Length: 250
Ligand code: CTP
Ligand code: MG
Image (cartoon, rainbow, N blue to C red; front, side):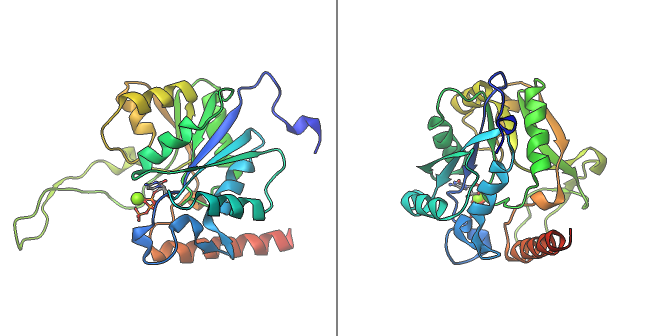
């Protein structure tokens, strides 16, 4: 590896926090989701490799299931990962938000940019990771990769007992985006968001929105989908098979 491939000393250093402490209830019974195999390799290892594939990322913090930190450490030791990237493993919490905060608490001081990436998005391409980092370097306090929606989205109200749910609104699809990870942040902004925002959220950028700061979008990628339900595993295996075929021929 040439010296050119390392971030220059003047560039802000970038770390990735990977929340991987969830059970994966919607995937069905079995090992914690992050430890389930994809193409014979645990999903978490794919996710770590996807972050380490970016030359800008020099540290990956994995937030493991609370009782599984040592298992995750041995797993990462057993799989080949790029030499230029350091790894830390910390135990997670009861909610994704708490797991991310525990990961942030473990970050050494000399990292100015933080990515937060779901272990459940094992196949995100490196170009998406780099685009997020680039937008944070360009000055955005928070950046999300996102895609337009295929489906129309309806807001529904509570159903009367025995009745179907009523539709109350249909937001204009053209203005909606489905948001993925890695989400990228100015580190100080994300730390402040975790200190000040106490409401439940489903992504990290919405905490920064609640501080009243700007969040911007870069193009996401269809291969950055989240493995949530059993059918997503079928799709993930198919994406891996297609990559292997392409690598073999090109
Ligand atoms: N996560 C976490 N700590 C938690 C809950 C979730 O680190 N207490 C992580 C998951 O491991 C996953 C990411 O947050 O990588 C996105 O969450 P999700 O897809 O909802 O995963 P799970 O919570 O594991 O799945 P489910 O909601 O179906 O149980
Ligand atoms: Mg969940």
